Amino acid sequence: MSAATYTSRKSGDRAQTEPPLVRWLLIAIALIFLTLFLLLPLAAVFSQAFEKGLSVYLEALREPDTLSSIKLTLITAAVTVPLNLFFGVTAAWAIAKFTFPGKNLLITLIDLPFSVSPVISGLIYVLIFGLQGWLGPWLQEHDIKIVFAVPGIILATLFVTFPFVARELIPLMEAQGKEEEEAALVLGASGLQTFLRVTLPNIKWGIIYGVILCNARAMGEFGAVSVVSGHIRGMTNTVPLHVEILYNEYNYTAAFAVASLLAFLALITLVIKSVAEWKVRQQLGND
Amino acid sequence: MKLFKHHNNVLPGFGPTLGFTVFYLSVIVLIPLSALVFKTAGLSWGDFISTVTAPRVLASYKVTFGSAMIAAVINSIFGVLVAWVLVRYRFPGRRIADALVDLPFALPTAVAGITLATIYSPNGWVGQFLEPLGIKVAFTPVGITLAMTFIGLPFVVRTVQPVIEEIEVELEEAAVCLGASRWQTMKRVIFPMLLPSILTGFALSFARAVGEYGSIIFIAGNMPMVSEITPLLIITKLEQFDYQGATAIACVMLLTSFLMLLVINLLQKWSRRYAD
Image (cartoon, rainbow over all chains, first blue to last red; front, side, top):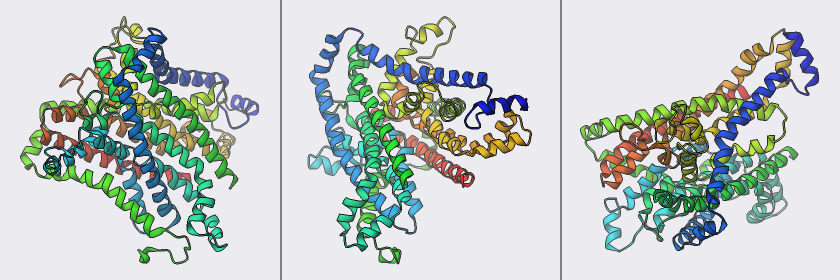
């Protein structure tokens, strides 16, 4: 046995000592698993969407209800992503560049929304702003609608996408240290100049990585938004909620046509994410 | 704030950035979450217990946690295999396979849900081959496990992958020099090094599956007592304006999440001990 492993050692570059047969078997199992679980669903979305031809596909996308759901999703992302980006950069600056008691607790709390069920993420806002909620009666008196309206959708989306930028930037900025910023300050740069000219170029790809994932989740969130939306057609339906309605009405081709937009978004996200990941690795390797 | 400041730190902006971080965290996350706890505290202990232990609710825990457990086991086995293959072997399409692993993170859950339900329905791409074998996936608890496996896979792969990358080849060489067979090296040297990360990935995948909603409801069938998951039950109660019931069940789920978070943090500490 050990003689056999030695011969295969010589042919491999690293300690790749599994016999070729085992190696190819493992690769085959991995690829079959990935194809069955990941590639097939992805292919199915597009296949179902174009099943009845391009004109039916485009027809489904031109529906007024579809267009209004796209508009709402874009508005939601346009509000939530910049807010969470600003928070992410601010939090990463405080956490990565300074030492203070309670830092680990703060990091755990920032990650908290990831471990809460999306349904609960929506429910908590119903409990505060809903009719039976804390602020419900007051809001009704002043005719302000938050839950079952656009502000509720934005709040729930803010919650579920809260950690994305921060959790990407904190380890990156910790790894980069603060010598470069200190040098800039000693040389007479102002705080803002230091951030814009020294820190920002260093964390550029980290920011892109965080923002692209934050955006994908903001546009694709279903559970949390479903609880607070109220499902008013053409009013409070985001794209994922519209997909659900079309599907439940047995309008499969239209459901998959709209879903294909989200699948396309997912593909773009994966490409940009891979590039950003590669750039961040490269940057850290050069330091 | 001045008190906390590191004495020889010349960088500006600690006070404002930390202040804003804590403020935004409180407004968006902590205060809303505490609303759930306060609402539940308004219930009497007896009401709370009878709500969260009603037969239909207990059945939903069984379906949710049972399926999540099976999915996490499947993901641990195949996730480690995929991570190993991606790090150690070179083959055409490896980069694409690597990028594809993150698909469940990027694909909206509703899209995953309707797609899985379509593929595994009796006349779907995969379902048509399972149907003659008497295997029903869509609209049964098997479908729930399938959807949970889909959304949980990246957690195991992405937790184990960097640990495999950092294994020093010298350790394997030393084992071979000492006369170990490849199987022995795998079992005695590599597996113990990977174990903390495998368990972390398992816990992350389990935690995600327990809370998952969007990708499951389309394929589950949602029959009370049989294939109804707990998050769906919360929504059902809300739609019936049973706010107290929804809140009580949500509180149980939130406590479970906190418990899982604690376990995951401890596991990560354990894995870091091996990394150094």
